[in-house]
Length: 208
Image (cartoon, rainbow, N blue to C red; front, top):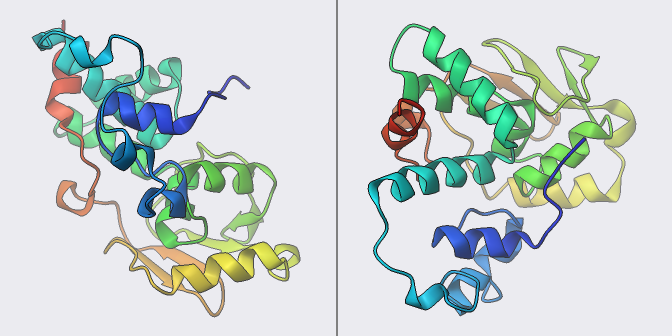
């Protein structure tokens, strides 16, 4: 499967904000955005004012990078969102939030979405007591996500659960860290999604 394998801190610098792609490192003084708050590249600091199209493109790229999806997959999500009832931009964010790797991250069972994606691929999670190893699997209201029985004794998850105790999941999810299980209470509303994305710019880009 194709995926980005370059330095992820470069992506944050390109967008000019923290995308929290490296978990705990993003909160430390080692964060590249804090140390070098300008885009990568030799002529980055001399770039001219961005056009309307450039702003729209950057917003789409930012959304792709936050959720870790490639261009073709992102386009499919947009097509689905456009066919659904309601506001297209909000539908798009709701679809991205429903990805299993994102839900695992939101529950605190991984320190970043990239780590969540890898853990899901390696078969460490179940949905409604059935193993699911597809990061793009879309959860539904009422679904229960849990760390598999075989994985619960791994030292990695002991560290992750300890760190998760300091975090609060979004209102549309509930988590029981003692049982290493979480539940989808309902689909998120726009105000429940705290990503720094102006989804209307993405809609404008695809409407060109």
